[in-house]
Image 1 (cartoon, one colour):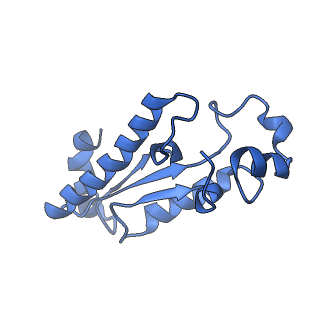
Image 2 (cartoon, one colour; image 1 turned 180 degrees about the vertical axis):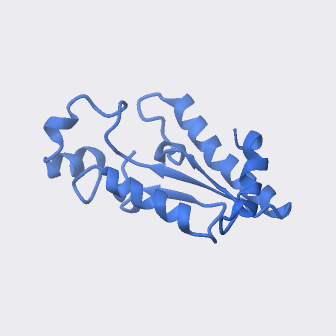
Length: 144
């Protein structure tokens, strides 16, 4: 998809924007773990590939002088269709999130937590080739 849109991304600066377009690929904390998390090998491998693809694209686009930034975001535990079925019941149970998932803040991420990271990457005109982990547990040595 990124390759298909390269001409438009590069042309953004000519259209009055302060920089060429930039790309944010969504990966997952699962792309950084060393365990399968209940056998989801394919999912974890594709998320790791997304992280590496972002790094390679950022490097290649910089070498070509395109000015297009490419970064990836690896969210940890956020409410989604992949979340555990009892999410609503456990949402306020701080000790459950600490004990079961190793999340030191005792809660899952929110839409605001996610949006702040994305907006930061969109408006920052310097960062490229980075993978941003949005997860309090990662910093505390998540028990995966």
